[in-house]
Image (cartoon, rainbow over all chains, first blue to last red; front, top):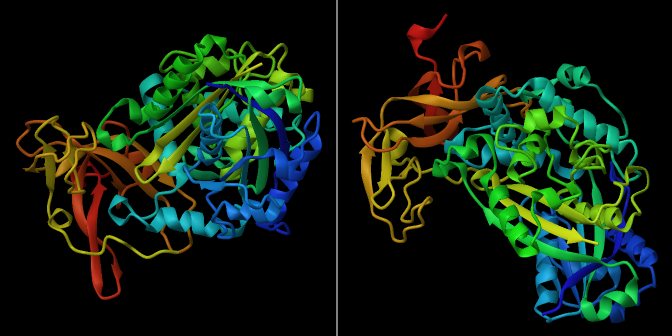
Length: 385
Length: 139
């Protein structure tokens, strides 16, 4: 069986792209990829398969054919993947599986989302769909419930939760593609308007449009594109529902634990081996909990973990050097692909002002909201230099 | 925006009946299914169990930012409701609190389960459970 290697990445600046269509987003990410592959690429001849991640919130491109049209890659099998907020990372995982199965040699993974065209649709859907669960249950509410419980059970402070957002906004000012380029203090987070107590505006990721693409290749083909491929060492995907009555799900995301355990097992690496990680920080509390779920610290110690500076850019194990979803933004289908792209740059030493020195092993992590609330889906990929 | 899917009046929307998996003890409410969500038994054998009319808050939030036609602030909680006879496991649900202020609720506090008309779908009333701080605890 062959390994799969990331051999190229392209991204557009994330932000408010009202004047960009879905096709513009896909074109932008794909063109950046084509232009940035070290030894170049002959698109129509080199790419054997396409995986397209989008929730298609703006209802424009609900088929792999959307990528074919945007890129000119006709007659290439193209598949549309949807898996909640883990859509991009699962599209990547599917491409990796196809390469490892030796069904194809070179895959394009591309993710895109126009979030700003239908913000009301997102909130409205969450508010009205499942009546008996309570009309008006939104994303910050689902995640905020973990914050309330974590503070009660582990004496985690409001300041520790806010510190995640402070860290990621600071990182975002150094990352060229981030949507929100400003620094904020713990007080700024605490004083920003309440969205869903205990979470405030600066605890929440912005609503962002974006697109990103990565190129994945087999052992046989990887060196045609670059001398510095990044190997996919392991991956895991899992699902869960807190309604099963697991008390861990009140404070944490058991699906993240299961998905990361699988990825650790497949790769042979453990939490201590991860030099840099891009993790799901849709809300500040999400990242703090994720430190625990991925094994970067003990259960209940997420608060002291950030207090000690370990996940800071200059800390022992930097998390979200790109600014994460909190600063870079969270265009759902693009998010996981962009995290892969950032880890690819980190492991090649090309991450500029947010470079983590000597990074050799990196992790990418998403959790998603499904029909049974937050943490219903988790996808983890581990990459190595 | 899609319309409501659960518009039929079901017995568990009218009174507190849960469904206990006879293989693992998991109690499903208000969903009445044929497969257990915890142990995966399929088909599972479920037994109807009466639930208590009050439960315990496991965690909560208070929503402040919602579409204009929904009243705020709106407290929302994950609540464990024990079985009426004290046996077996509680069921875990999430739902809205009504007539409740932020400073009245905390993790571990007891709330009453009430049935209310949430809103109507055409001519049909949509009934469901809501939770509230017991009257005697009101300040």
